[in-house]
Image (tube, rainbow, N blue to C red; front, side):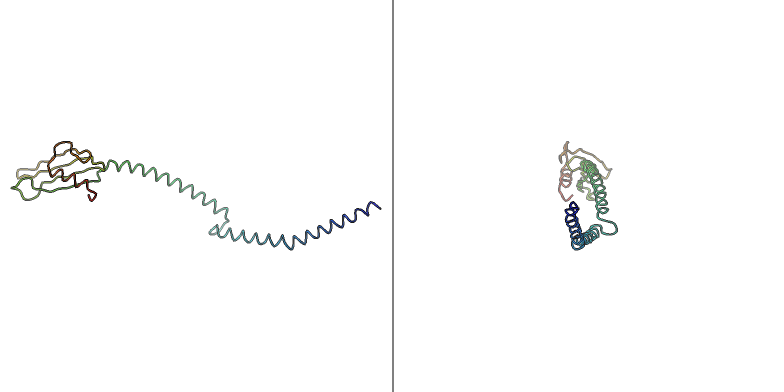
Length: 165
């Protein structure tokens, strides 16, 4: 019986500790867990933007991010193709009307310069006379004709070179 007398205080201490733990759980831990659950629900509502939780919203954002990256890469490739095309386009033009001969005052002769951004292209000249029309084409490189050009052709090239063209 002496053995049991030393166990009773230990059992009583254990029972007291369990009661204290139950009181702590009811008084402190359960309300803290309820507040945490309420905060988590508020967090999910704020992040989700609608039905579903924050994890679902984050997964949707990751998926959206991946599709945006793919679209950006596609747009970058398309821009590269367009820049290559733009290097050879005839985006600069200059046009000059004039009278090739003093006896013709109709202004039916013209010089038309069609150049790309680097100034390479052609200047087309059409000279009107009473007997007919003659048309000539002359190559242009870096805004300079590669063969001798008339003043009107040089003016058409200069108009094509100016930013307002």
